[in-house]
Amino acid sequence: MPQQKTLIVTGGAGFIGSTFVGLAVSKGYHVIVLDALTYAGHRQNLAWISPQNGNGSFELQVGNICDAAFVSRLFAEHSPTAVVNFAAESHVANSITGPRAFIDTNIIGTFTMLEAARGFWNGLEDAEKAAFRFIQVSTDEVYGSLGETGKFSETTAMQPNSPYSASKAAGDNLARAWHETYGLPTIVTNCTNNYGPRQYPEKLIPLMITRALSGEKLPIYGDGKNIRDWIHVEDHCTGVLLALEAGEAGESYCFGGDAERNNNEVVETLCDILDEARPLPNGRSYREQIAYVADRAGHDRRYAIDDAKAQRELGFTRHYDFASGLRATVEWYLANGEWIEAVTSKSGEAA
Image: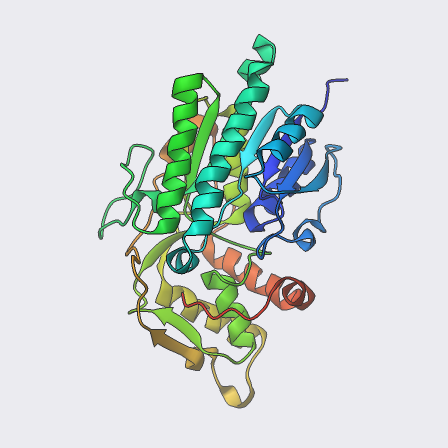
């Protein structure tokens, strides 16, 4: 019987990371979840995962990716075949008011993981070295802001406009440099805005759902015409797994949703779904709770990704269209009030 492959997945108790852990377990991997369990990482995000037909498994190791001794010990104890680095501070507004945490996690943490991986990788036999992968999971925000036409791709120059995107761009460049300089088999992935179950309610879609249900204002930045391309979290994680299993070391791969919407459209559609699923009294609409607030600094106007390379080289395909995926997401939040209560406190950020 072949030996079970072990992954170290950082940030694996977060929204995207936990979805990836569930997918990897279903494919038979043993996953070491490394997570600091800060405000957006929770044990509850892993509670739905159980060994499935692939006989996979996972275990949670609580720790910080900046802790070099702890991280190196995990490599020594578990001998992973790959690392998937989801761990990140990711809220743009938070990066503007408190950038230090983003520098620590997204740059120093990525450096620490790369160095621990390099030290472990250097001790492997040639065949194991060739099979090892370090996947750096990133964002389309590193590319800056698009005009009315065009899309980002793997060849787009980085032009980050916020402390968050600048810190992620730095991490991506570190991963690339560790491949070019040391030969470490790194791969960088960049994706558009994710949505789906278990997303912490500081981001647009869960924030609007939870505030609408609480009878609060639905704050939208500026004129609400900032455009994002939306990808369901399960489609994104499928892409990351494809990059892990079929990607070429030293390459980067972009994953998009082919679902561009401006913030007005997203919030209004959410309100319409809620009007049907949980009607307000007296025929009122949740749209009445929409309120526009001053735009935030460094607010990029439009993002969109061309993922033709991932489709061509990895066989990436999307299984969710935005309309059905968004409706299913709303239904999940309506059915999981206990999860919301367990992992959140009031959040007042705008969209």
